[in-house]
Amino acid sequence: MTVYESYLEANQPRFLAELLDFLRIPSISAIPAHAADVQRAAEWVAARVTDAGLEHAQILPTGGHPVVYADWLHAPGRPTVLIYGHFDVQPVDPVSLWTHPPFEPHVEGGRVYARGASDDKGNMLVPILALEAMLRAEGRLPVNIKVFFEGQEEIGSPQIGAFLPRHKELFACDLVVNADGGQYSETEPEILLALRGGCGVQIDVKAAKMDLHSGLYGGVVMNPIHALVMILASMRASDGVITVEGFYDDVLPLSPEDRARIAAVPFDVEALKADLQIHDTFSEAGYTPREASWARPTLEVNGIWGGFQDEGIKTVLPSSMIVFGMCFE
Image (spheres, rainbow, N blue to C red):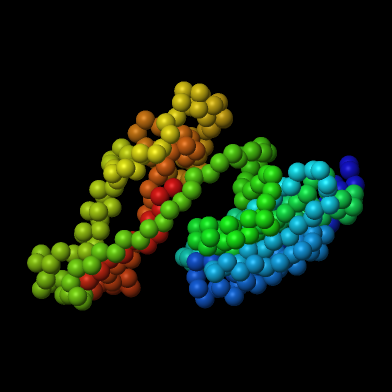
C-alpha cells in the first residue's frame, strides 16, 4: 500500500464525518430562501480545499450562486488539470417519501443516505481528499491543479456562461475532469465522455381573467388545463418521437460503429425494469434504451401546476395553467 493510500485508509472516519457535515447544509439552488445555505456550502468548500493544501481559495460572485476557485500550481512544465463539481442540490419534495430527513444524513449498510450524497457533494469531495492525501504523502502533485466548484448546476448554471469569459485566464487549463459522475456499477468503474445538455422553458396558458365556476362556464370557456394537455400531447408521438418542428435538425445520426460500440457495453434491460419497478422501457422509435439515453435528445415535463391543489374537490375552471421546468436534453 502506498503512503497516500495508507493516509486515506487511516483517515476514513474523519472523511466520513466531514461528508456528513457537508451534507447537512441544505444548499438548494432552485429555492431563493436557501440562497444563504448555498453561500454557506461555498464557504465550507473553500475552507476544505484550503485544509487539503490547495492555495488561493476564493469565493467568486456570479450574479447568482457563487463559484469556489483554488489551485496548486507548482509543477512547472506539466499540464494543468481543472476539476469541476457542484455543491448545490435538488429540492427534496415530497419530504413524506423520505425515510429519514434529507439533510440529516443516515448511514446504513455502508451507504450514506441524504440529499446530495452522490450528486454531487460526495463525488466532489473525493478528489479533494485524493489531493490532500497526495500532498500529505508526497508533498507535491504530479500535475498542476485548479478546482471549479459551483453552486448553481442544478438550475442549469444560468450565470456561468457570462461568468467564465470574465475569468478565462484564472480557469485556463489543459484538461477538465468532471467530478459529477458515478460508476457503471458498484464493482465496475466508468469513464464518461459526454453528457446531454439541458434547456429549460416554461409554458403559461392563460384563458379568462379569473377563475370561473366550472358548473356555469364549463363547456363555454376553454379550460387552460385541457389546452395545456393538448399542447404537451402534440409534442411527442405515441412511438416516442419528438414532433416539435426542428427538434432533430442539428442531431448527428448514430453511425453503425457508434451503435456497435454502445451495444458492446453490457446492459441488462430486465434488471433495469426490475430495479425501477416498471413494466417496460419507453424510447424513441428505432433506438434501444441505451442509445436513447446516451446519444439521443429528449423532451421531458418536470412539473405542472394549475387549478385546485388541496384535498377534496372545488368546482373551479382555472384561469391559467403552467408547465414549469419543461426540459430539452
